[in-house]
Image (cartoon, rainbow, N blue to C red):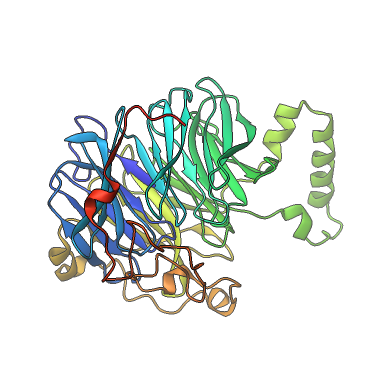
Length: 441
């Protein structure tokens, strides 16, 4: 759920990423980084701003906690970990080559280089494992389950085909390889429980979802057929009912994870129903490539952006009890859309925020694209979710990002350099300073 800047791009944001439960947004600029809370549609609250490190191209926040990881272009091989509420550096680590991406949950911190992956224990930042000689991964593509009870890690296993390596980040062992696509991988994303993994290739036409850890294909969605695209973000909703994909085109696609054939009532006898059954029967005699294409589900809902070719990332989140689609763009804007979870269709733009000039954005009433959102989607509000909505949690907390009612095990954030909730036991900075240039494990 992040986007990093390219060399020489005249963009307002050098990077931007949502936190693990989509309750916070982090942006990096040439002068530093900022953190925002995403608890309201009408108002965007800035949680923190830092100008101590210039040219930030990676910034990742651990849920809604005070832990934030920052990497600067001035020192692209060094990872800095901060407790931003105290304004203190927890530690920093240096690596053998440029850091391409960072992923974290409450158990593990992953640092991805072009040809190696480092796995740290987030409680004390100790290096647990180095995965060496991975296939060249120039974009730092990898995904980490936000569920710290499994901490599954996925990364490309080939540069020529879409092979996914699934790794157990807790037990530090390989799980399986998944043959996901014919072409090289471009996007990977776990759902919130780590039970599903979505993938897209560089062609960007087909998105597949696999069961984890078995690696069995569950769903196949066709994003488009006419042209290849660059998938810029791929993300599940927190309840795993929807999967969203954005690209360098003007269209964002939202797919619904359901098997229509299992829930569809028996159709009454009709000419169209008869022909439909005949068509489905005919697919059994077609080549697998053709019949597979015909049976693929298309988008449940879409968003038509007013731009294309611009870097962007999207998430699906519940804000003020209603489902929203959020799109952040490299020019420094955040767009919020309503999503109808019953009927889908075209999502409605309800708000636009400027991430770099909040004062002006709040005063500019022309930014309000419609009156305050009424409590529509009655069916959505009435339908209670089995899991507490993460958007109901305040945008800032010292609980390490736990959902309301969730009990963090006692060993979480216990003794060690990472101490987020005890003001009296914050450790010396130098306990965790280290270099990973020559270590092997």
